[in-house]
Image 1 (tube, rainbow, N blue to C red):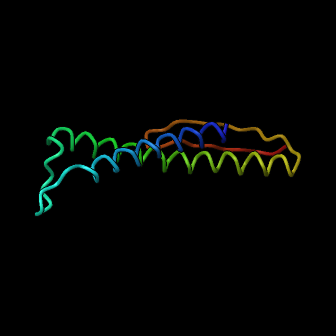
Image 2: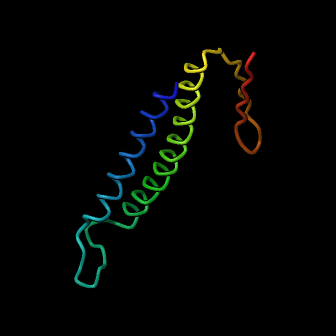
Length: 98
């Protein structure tokens, strides 16, 4: 599970980098005014960069946590009981060891 989430986070990170690269490489006038993109294109790139960056950060956090939990469980040798619940303000993950 953790590796899948980390892979998805890396993919979102690549979308973030590509959107930022496209914006940064757009043609500009000497005063810095962007001429290589229309306003809607620039806004779409900014939205893509923000959203994919947020998803990448969340994904790396969740994926890393899942991976660390798996490694600890493997090292300790106890199979955990995991409960996942979604609430209005986030996700709750609880684990108990027998």
